[in-house]
Length: 257
Image 1 (tube, rainbow, N blue to C red):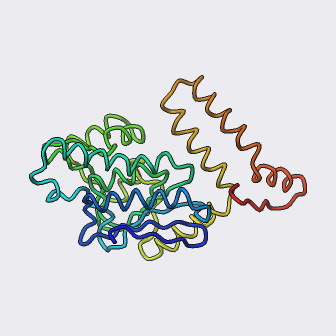
Image 2: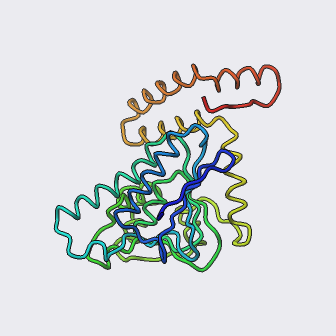
Image 3: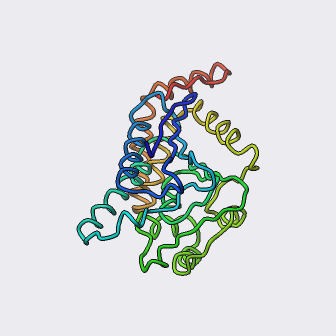
């Protein structure tokens, strides 16, 4: 299996596992999409983490050998499958964390950009979008998601020069949200993920969808999306428990429903 899936204390762990560098082919993209659907549909999963099962690499992007000899129609199909896999992450009403502890290049960075948070390990590895070196553009959402995350000119420079950043600079640039010590990286990621999983995960998911959808519309349309999601949440078990716990002056016990 090139993508592994497990559930640990409410956290769905999606592990990229295609040696030697997690360069994705058709099967790996299908496996990623299937794992995201499992995380989306399983009520036992309250938060998801995307990580690598391999040392040194989070994901090096597309397996270029897979594309050798492809015609335009075949390449378009590969691109559509890649977009479907990452768009599923953005559309799922659960939080996704990219846990990055190795080279995160091209489509690998684009997978991470589709996640809600990017938490990285300290270390000697690189982040970047290097497709221009192949005469191509980022094609898995990078041209759209990176300039929405960091200043447009900074993102454009990274893409047209194939500039590589270390973890410290990725943090300073705003690509990475948190940087953990290498020796405690995975334990700290899971501790933080479990804390999110113990919270009001239905509310977390709809906050995510409100933000993602609202940023693509006018303010008036975004506010309408916010109201619709808030009305849905008000009818949820978690909202009832949250209000009751507040009035009773005790910690809330959220179920994600």
